[in-house]
Length: 203
Image 1 (spheres, rainbow, N blue to C red):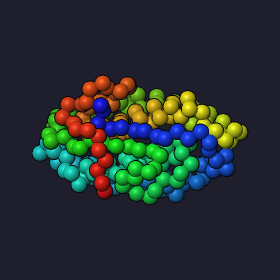
Image 2: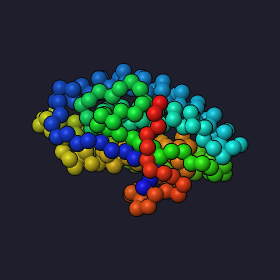
Image 3: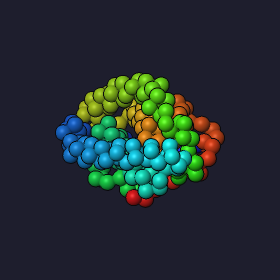
Image 4: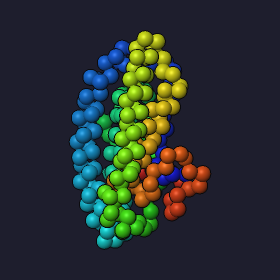
């Protein structure tokens, strides 16, 4: 199992009103996420130095970056109509929220070379992520029209959005050094080497 897992709860009935105004309603959440992500980017940069010199991702930094990614996943999922439930303004673990992003514990040792060259190694991942982003835009637009007119989210469209967000946030986690394994296009059948069962660090 890959060390970063994204899941969402499918609920067929959606609010037409909040769906129609979703882009406006999401603005406060996006502002908070931008600030949170900026701070996490700084933390990940400091962690990059730590990994190069020690081969380890400091636990506190790991938890903070995971929290920022968790917050991003909730906000993106809300914006892309996976749920009508407004995302909380934090990155803490919330098992009741219908969108979940979970992480395995950090590795005991990370490859210093893979960390040092992460920006270069990320290029192919970025290309695939861009393609998934296009898919997400098309799927979310289709979902918006369907929900506004019928009040229902088709399971097939939800699955497409899930697939796009799953790869996107695995890619983000790879870029921010949470994992050193390239995000797969399909779910691996065996756990990634060195990782335990996925858990969500408490912030």
